[in-house]
Image (tube, rainbow, N blue to C red):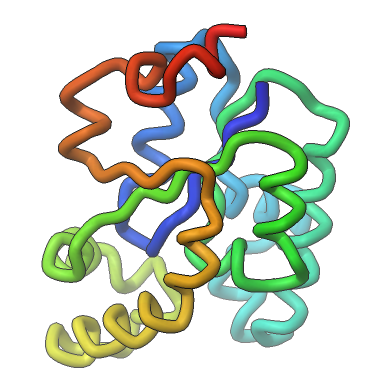
Length: 170
């Protein structure tokens, strides 16, 4: 079983990957952590030193390294589905789950994390809200290609196996 969690930064993909992996006895991975380990530098320094195009290529390579791996939950970056046909690739490889949280929830979560996120570190709260609203509008078409769309209310109210049905049990 291969589960790919997608959604905006701050939606809880990393958090939920650990919960879901525990429920289903799978291994949880965070794609950004995989990339940082492989490249021996932070995402922020990659953006600053080489730019977004370089990062997106490293992201694609790291994602595709999961092709022959089984039984995992992967928390992807917020932009992962939007580049290099990654969304199509993830849908072909396994089950994609869009974690859909409202903008105000994302802003509330991300206000404290700005220094660790290169795309938002210079934004005040109003700019952060506007940025997230714009990014979500740009990415929503990709996110809606996911096989499942859930939010934290649904994820916390029932075990993931019940939410996603019998397909996960086989």
